[in-house]
Image 1 (cartoon, rainbow, N blue to C red):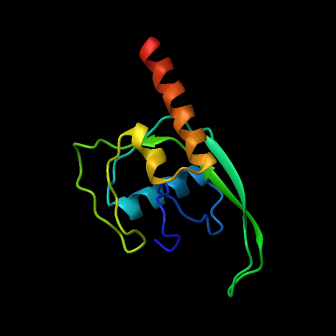
Image 2: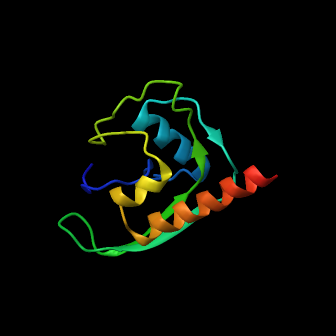
Image 3: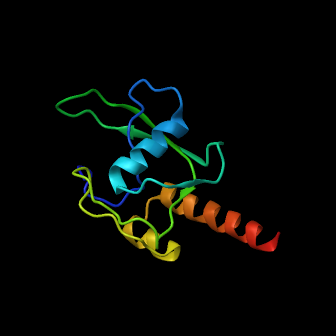
Length: 121
């Protein structure tokens, strides 16, 4: 919400060492959905980007550790938290229209490759 752009569900670890646990907690908090399928406990994507200095913190590197999880779009109702303007189901091909950043494009490509491998097995 505070960034004013589309990003995947997620949040800060705040001292928790189990980053998959953090990812699931944040996905649940931000979407209201409680049941997710974890594709792998391995990190799906890592994005490192610079956060510029602002009134509350010095400039620093920020690490987005991303896992691939899935929710059933016909299952539980989405509940928008106060951290988001909106939460919506979006076709994979349309995600880049919402956020064209390189890291988002990279995750889309990885997801398509994984889906293709799953389909061909």
